[in-house]
Image 1 (cartoon, rainbow over the protein chains, first blue to last red):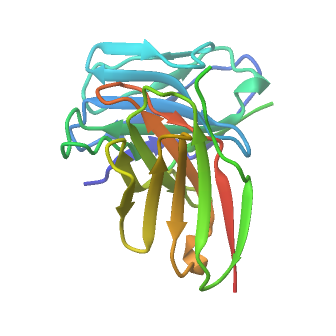
Image 2 (image 1 turned 90 degrees about the vertical axis):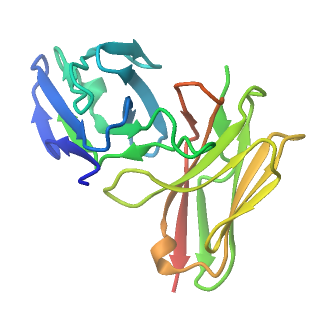
Image 3 (image 1 turned 30 degrees about the vertical axis):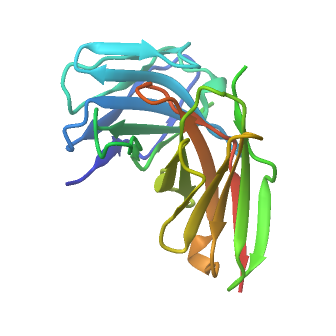
Length: 116
Length: 112
């Protein structure tokens, strides 16, 4: 299994541009998440999905949109990029029910985004 | 609001010594706690977890201790190695919940 993959690894955007961060997992996980990590900080949840066709907002959803048309893919869309969106973006997934009490998430390698 | 935080932002230890990374949580409803390790340029990786019905859980060279009375969590790394240098996050969630709350992280430096 490739696990969770993210593309691109790095991107520079101009203010006002748009882009889509791609995330895919091949573990047949139902739950998927998008986080952002600012320098020296922890992870903040942007959006999450509990299955194809179902998405919901996290702590910091403003300026982002998501879709979940398949179990495997969970793209994150940035509309009208702003400098405040400069961050590292992590996608994660987990099964609906793993071991009886193991609900850990599997993370992708991240996408580093710079908005100038 | 609810939060998970760490007492020390950075920790420097000598190779071979034991490391202790601390974490405080405030959500009484949380009953599942996880420690993640994040190496430079990579995503967080699961280390060990513990449920609220346990006080201690051991893995390979790592031990997690949970004190529900004072809402405190700690990660102990035995015989710390250079490869342990990373940022360590504690995280909390409620069973059946969709969201995991992450702390700010502690950076561990291992001196040779």
